[in-house]
Amino acid sequence: MLIVMRKGSSPQDVQRVLDLIEQLGFRGHAIAGTERQAIGITGNPGPVDPALFELLPGVAQALPVTRPFKLVSRELKPDDTVVAVGDRRLGGGGFTIIAGPCAVESEDQILSLARMVKEGGAHMLRGGAFKPRTSPYSFQGLGERALRLLARAREDTGLPIVTEAVDEASLELVESYADVIQIGARNMQNFALLRRAGRSKLPVLLKRGMSASLEDFLMSAEYLLSEGNGNVILCERGIRTFSQHSRFTLDLSVIPVVRRLSHLPIVVDPSHGTGHRDRVAPMARASLAAGADGVMVEVHATPDRALSDGPQALLPAQFTTLAAELREMALVLSRRPEVVS
Ligand code: PEP
Ligand code: MN
Image 1 (cartoon, protein in one colour):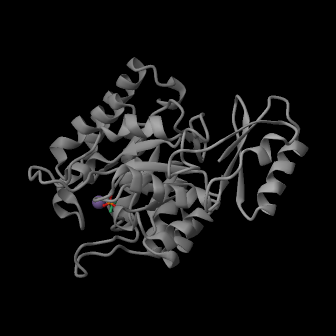
Image 2 (image 1 turned 135 degrees about the vertical axis):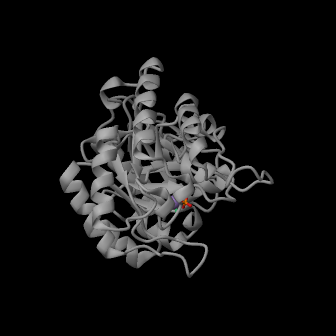
């Protein structure tokens, strides 16, 4: 249920609503909006009687929320969520480019790539320290050493760091070095990990599971918000279909639907979504055209020698060209220019 407050209702009115929710044994979530203050109710096993709230001072309406996801839904929060990362804002009309290697491989590799993608137009740096690999014999990432190197790359370039946590122990480490915690496709329904990330102060970039419906995806985001973390960035990265020409099928049609159903920003990862370098730029451009809030792309100076995902990595010069195209497109599409350049 959603309690919508009247314009000009007082903080005491809001507190009274929150107190009643607590007395009933549910959880209240205050949601400040530009137009109105609202309070979401979760934890209620069945419908709540609207009259309980509508009689309280300052309350305009008590509305049932019709979707299974509550806190992530636009019904609950009509305004776009804008996630602050360093001095950057992701969502709400800009376009954010996150770039970097699949994995941090060495000091030289990450420092030089960080400089190249920064020069090329990236706004944030990605790079895996903990790699969830299909084979236990594949490169698993450099762990904490990679996190230290990413922090050095941030010092050097000013780019905020996005990196994946694969379990609760790595999440604690990621939290102490990075700016955004990535939850990977394979962990999208690791509910213990989601709950832990939901208690973090850092924003979370949540990737769509490769077999997840949109509802599954949004319900996973709901775990994060239900624990108090509203700074969630959704990431479409391709799903499994019968199609054989691509590593995954990038589901760009999810973007306008997410926009309608949720206030959370959504970025697209065309690197994992296609698995082939030559398809990354077209799908990145399509993502922007379809209304995404950003893209995350893998870049490597020597992809033939990359320890993971070489075939889908753009060369630095290809990345620079793509970023320039995206900047121009964003301006044509009236994205807010101050956050595009
Ligand atoms: C990644 O971004 O490096 C990654 C492993 O992605 P995904 O979880 O989407 O496979
Ligand atoms: Mn990768």
